[in-house]
Length: 363
Ligand code: NAD
Image (cartoon, rainbow, N blue to C red; front, side, top):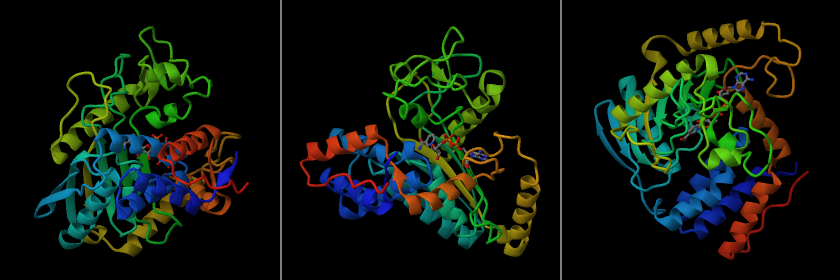
């Protein structure tokens, strides 16, 4: 697949967002977050979203000039997105969280009415990069329902991601980050297969008859639901986690929970929590624990062809390692852009009547 240099892709995305009416700073922040998701290997949350964001501005769902507002009291704050881009809301929430945790040792920041917060791992990495522990519970504010409760094929909850990060203080070349939807896969991974004609993996979805949804187009047309994490047999675990994320995000963020079946996009709500490990221990001790655990986990024998698998070899991977390695490779080799995504971006530039042409593939 042709690959495109990260900087060139970011510049293309920024131009499209400015053309849609975003001020240069806001467009720069959004473009940088989208390309960061592409670099981390989460192309479902990368520049593929640019046409969707541009449409959001056109329909008035996103106000490109809006700034999130912050209401705070002691170690607690709520960030209200209004119609601002989620990437601005995420930045504001992280700034507030880090500043308050530095002062108080612990902080909780709720988010409501945010635009799409994108890859939640970005916010986790930023907080861990400041030497703080991070946990978050994110919901879809009652919209974009894709997950069925365990034992059903009716869509009732968003893909409500759970995300955690621990600073490694140099023990590893990355901070361990767990960041995943509470469905078998993020909805973005289904969207990515739309139009490909490829069958969806059977473990991802369920319909009323118990059979899986065959194709992404069927799922997008409303057929079946995503199975909660754990799948057909132990999906009650993912369903439980999705329910808790729904409630944590709504209670701390102050936004709504799912009540009526609803496929429309209603934005993200969230609960972000940070803890300064210095309240309990030293950075050296944290690094020692991370290193010892990493060594122990990696000493497990990989099963031939199955191990970590994710990077094309059998290495055992820690949470966040795949994203770290993928970023390292893609900074060097470029970001793979499928013909479908390239076509959508070219169409957008043509519709906007800009001179911006999709950067030349580097391979
Ligand atoms: P995923 O399944 O690709 O990864 C989940 C976690 O597993 C990651 O921490 C990753 O490092 C780890 N991992 C992956 N492969 C591994 C392996 N072989 N060995 C060890 N660890 C491994 O993630 P997902 O559930 O498809 O979610 C993708 C993205 O979608 C996330 O960034 C999430 O934040 C985002 N998302 C956003 C929203 C939203 O509304 N903003 C909703 C849902 C998901």
